[in-house]
Image (cartoon, rainbow, N blue to C red; front, side, top):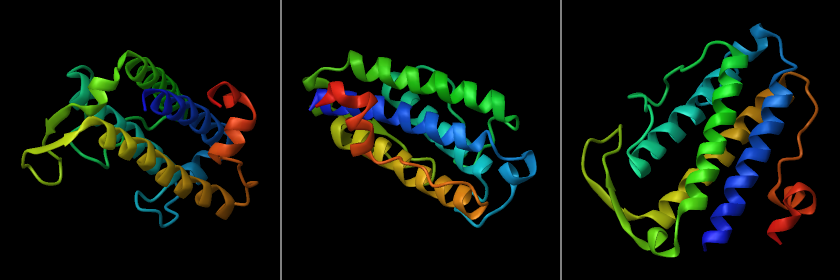
Length: 169
């Protein structure tokens, strides 16, 4: 299972890079335009993804800054947001690489921001959620991009595996 999560951490980095490359072609106005996504704009959605990852990594490791709101705008500036995303993706990869199979099976405790109650779950399924959450919201950014007339992105895992991710097969 560990190798599976290492693959997802690498895929996550790759897919985020592609989404950020596409968003770099947007004007500031388009990047911030409310397009009806759950977090409104590409900027809001990408900030949410970074915020959520920081929240989860703080729960998992006890380290790092974690916002107290899921809709926190951590960075107004695209370049700063992108640099923070790249650093967080490397942090995720490094942390996943440090795990063992026993770690994945271990139960962790946390309190959701939306419901301050103690939750206990095994790490493995929670980590699946973290990567699935990224995919879900990247899909929303993809829709924003195509709504703004940008070309469709190839973000499928299988596409990654046929190219840069070939080592995971």
